[in-house]
Image (cartoon, rainbow, N blue to C red; front, side, top):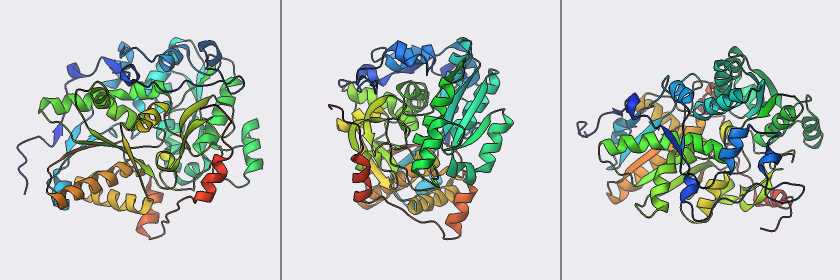
Length: 459
């Protein structure tokens, strides 16, 4: 039995210790992420070119590669106090169950109605839309966590919210959909017949279950055709990773309280918002040569953008209406299988994380969903929280690292991000419990066909 008096089960910061500024990891990157390109001219997108799609202040944050710390406006800090600081938890019971000498901590982001970390950026983006005098915003959502968070944030600031929800998640997660509607959002399954790009995707892929790339295309079109509306995104973009840095800043402050230095930091990876936010201050130390960490991205084997993708310029969306981003990608035409980690079903990865991975500053592993749900079940039984399928990728990777410590006898400290709860994911848990869950991994031939359609851009 481990001694539990060395560190509390839960480490909290006080309200006074909440971060007052977001950290922009790009400021410390020697190799900056490549700029977004105009798909027509193949030149870097300018502020003016991005204005019809994004809020002005968010464009400034998107393009700012040099300012290390960006102050958090007071109204956002006040909103954060409703659910932040979030706890850093020592997983004593999981450690004991595994019989590992490793010390395992997780940053829990599920203690708000959206059930995830997504609210950290949703409230920021809604605030800037309100300050610009907009009527409303459009967006996409995969598992529904981002859509739920944005609907909450828009309700708070009295903004209209239109959500295009990936069709497979719309059908699998009706309760998440209804939470969005309760907060006033209009929710449309994507791809749909309501947009030109949606109709085009349906014609090309009859019966498709959709993808985040499809939903992005529809949301961008919807925003561009309605005066007083802008598009907002819950992952991938630089601005989102900036807002999510509050996760890592709080995590580091909590660890510092007890002089804890992690050896391994793990996050699930779909578009990159959670992972990028969690690792940001630790990666900053690594970039500045102050300290070294092993940083691991855990992604689904069904959508393995880092572990099997190409580092290339690609469209951010399936309909090819968005700018080109240089990232690890499976190709914007790639539509993942209908797995249950809906929030990780994106064909590409954040340009920031892609560059860091390309430079060898972080690792990546891919895991199959039945193994992920085995880890989720073990975690729920040990730690008392039912994790989201997305979060459970990080749990799987953390358990695997802890078991390696058991084999070697090394007493490493592992920190992972528990991005949210799985209480809206009972269809997935039902499939797992009934033994009906399958593992689909794309073939090399399928990926090659998608790679062949990558835009021809000088890399």
